[in-house]
Length: 195
Image (cartoon, rainbow, N blue to C red; front, side, top):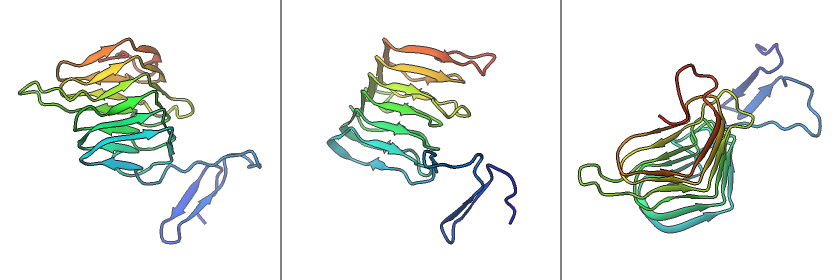
């Protein structure tokens, strides 16, 4: 009874019913996206696995759509992660885990690469290579790439259309090379593509 304007909605968790007044008239060509599902995958201690050509969307809870806590030699190849209200990929442990030729867009944070040991300079070698990271329809999200720890690789990627500062890094011995950044940071007065 409280809904009285286009675009308003209410989700009744008990009955799992969504009440919605559409922002405009719906037709057979209209789409309604609800970003509320659980995380898709969480790897803990897995080794030598590949995820190929999978599309993940609608994730709205958990740490990320895909999370790697530990393990080694995990690959996402040619996958797409989009339309989520949680980060796309968070790799916070293990070694030699990463993405090759993946598309990540319309997420609040694109990617976290973390791992290794700073004290001994042990490299993790987690990576993102030849990926496309952007914002298409989700103009209110800033996106983000975080590189931390020792020895991560961020190479040959295309990053664009993100209103805020896109990439931050800390730690040591990372390889950040041959990436293209454009149309980023236009909502900030003091920022850059990489910080």
